[in-house]
Image (tube, rainbow, N blue to C red):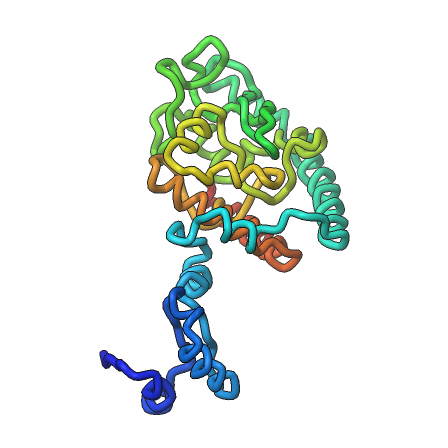
Length: 280
């Protein structure tokens, strides 16, 4: 690669290398000489990004290097958006009808399969943290062995679910691949605990731990959690702190950029995951 130490070398370099993208360090955004040179590029067929914005475009995540109160105040908007709010309400209503119909038709067969394979309840409920930190019960079909009195698979306190988790039943593996275990969350959408799209709600114990590790983790709770979301379609299991940070980055990207087009994209990609049995 080539190193250029002069601002006047930018335009010749673009011409010589037929570059279409220019990326600048964030600290240079306040340099008047740099801004003057970049202004001239507005008349060229190139795109200009600062480094954090380029990271966002490439990865679909917000880089944690820019996390700060000032950045969040400038970029995170959870205020009223009438058109988008109406779209979300219609989307949730359609989800209730469609998911509710599938839940009604499949419950007898799923219930029989669960009961034939292992002892324990058909449905499983677990505390989760929603918008504003409100705790609610999330409903699912049981996909793991009932090892504890409450029907859960945990006997030594909370733990992250992992890929190939031995606590899963054979029926549970299939339910998770098709995401059928989440059908009962139609009830949560009806109750207003969650929406169709948003950050996946975590358990209070995990939230408490992650808030100690990540000072801005509670920003996930600025909007209503969802049945599916931007992080869901990009990540597999979140089974350690590092992956939880990546999940937060995806969630903040969604909160910052949420729109009708982004929501439709998430729905289509979620359907693709279900059809290809790529659920976790």
